[in-house]
Length: 217
Image (cartoon, rainbow, N blue to C red; front, top):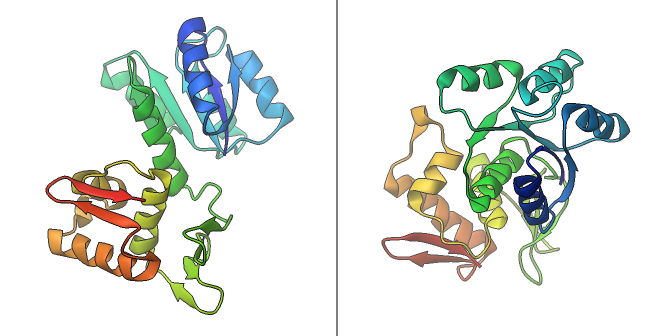
């Protein structure tokens, strides 16, 4: 996954860049002119733009990119607390935002949510265990001899687990990131999806921590 970060604050920019480079291929631009140079030279899977940078703002740059049919997903960083700037960001074509100050883990969660939402790098096979392989684009888990096709929600849950391996994930977090507000599942429905996934990938891969949530091992 290739990310372009535009952040002019030298301290915050260095901290975020160093953190992101542990997980993703990340370029860092200090202003909109440098960001445009990076974009002209290659393709990115995700933009992370601060609003207040020298030259064009992050919102203005994104709006210009959208006018040229650049559909790269974009997260806006903002120190503003008002809804006016948030509305401008969404109107310009952002799909998400994060307010300063923020935790690095929160930024990573939003990046991983974007990966699932926009199916970024979802065509590469993922090893589940020694004999099981997951093919995200086909929604298939295979042991080499037979294939099991996942339902869309099963695949979305598995994608989320894989993106947050070994981290405790509450039921609330799963629901918020997989289902829309108009289709919230019952606890029984969620347990049914988890039970089915365990049958497919192995009961030892998804551990239940009673009263707390699930951990993908």
